[in-house]
Length: 284
Ligand SMILES: Nc1ncnc2c1ncn2[C@@H]1O[C@H](COP(=O)(O)OP(=O)(O)OP(=O)(O)O)[C@@H](O)[C@H]1O
Image (tube, rainbow, N blue to C red):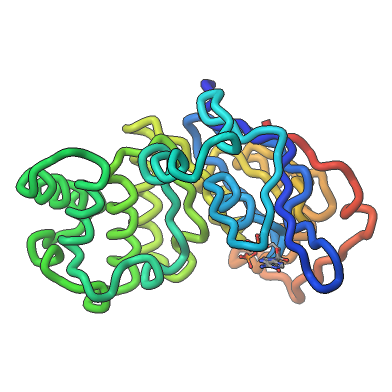
């Protein structure tokens, strides 16, 4: 499998009143043209890993790594100006809540057109056609009407699909999706997942899918990194997640409710201090 992205020894640090807090601690993994899941409980460092790749960690957070290579070029060596081209052009990120990402006072059409013209020297008519095409690609049924609407007029699921359309306009090679479907109901969730699935298969895109939902990730992804306290504790093929060896992963699986075999009581996730200090597993 060809490697698009290779991350070596990534740390994300925050200075706090009580000293440095390490949110991500020496994580290494690679991404090919695949659906790579990152799972773990809240605070395990999933989002910070995704944001660090795009150097989107806010001050005073610090990103350090031996390298974050995109096609062999280290993103950490790029200037802020060069990074602006990488964001969107090569790597896009979709966040959980589109309301925070779309401009509330601009029509959806104008936002899509602007996104397109930012990345290519096209005429307004070409950008309009491309915007319509992208809305159709994410299964928006009435794209002409949606072009003239404002974000608040959209349901959560439509907003999320519009965000994906916006992220796809520059045709990125990598999409980082941070809990992209957790605010959506199950049927809309299915639509959004199938759009992302199609993009991986048809465009050969690499997808990093960040989620706390083990069931979803095991069904949707090819490979899964399991994070605990800022480290990767286990790497599994998604369809073999049930064979996971690490006690934390087993605990996460054991604490899931199941409809097919209801448990009288959900297991409480136990944590062992030794897990924190064990070296990070390589996600390659
Ligand atoms: N500005 C900050 N200062 C200090 N610590 C921070 C800061 N921002 C995030 N953190 C910490 O970094 C850790 C990792 O956060 P991250 O958002 O990556 O977790 P996550 O696994 O994505 O969790 P969730 O599923 O809840 O989003 C958390 O413990 C969080 O409290």
